[in-house]
Image (cartoon, rainbow, N blue to C red):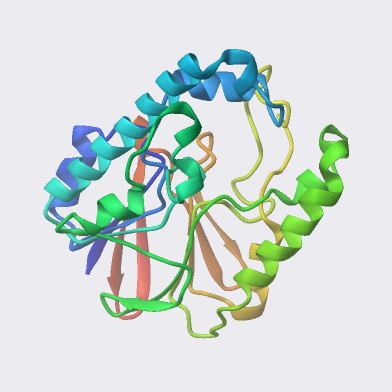
Length: 272
């Protein structure tokens, strides 16, 4: 059995990845469908700061609409591949009602609702399931970087971030299994493919922004394979205990991973 691991599209799905998908039995996605370079630039310049009022509703409406439509188009492209696609959400997706940005006169369907109307895509909630014979724990969305509630840059939000971090950890451990084949996430574990490398752009440059509870979960339950994305500057394979950790790389730049599963073992090939 062969499957494609992909994510961080940000509005782009290169033809080479579409061609690779043709030879795969199914696709696992870590989300981040939409993308707006204008919005991304603004957010990095105002990291953890309020900027929407400063830019005004007209500009923000334009940025969010571009972002949303790019993601919607990616979902259409994935559906056209005519392969089963199983996906979680990333940190850049219109997943909840609160993500729809009605304040800017935007009233569109969330991505999970769009996915429901597709023929080949299934949105995965945070619950252990069996897919194509593999026991998988889908755990999507943005996990607050563990450094955020200790780093001086966020000192005015430490209390809030610590509370959120504790809540997210509790949620993760609600689903337990010592026989997991795959823990599928968007964000990386701490110190594994999580070091920021955007000098002069991201104030967290040079720091590790992974989610420590993932490390705890891996050490306790030893899933065979941990799949993540999120960090565009990383792609690779590592190990934590008995668990293989795979960072698939950003699809927008033509990166992904192809996995052959045979005799209960994973053989991983990076697409660079």
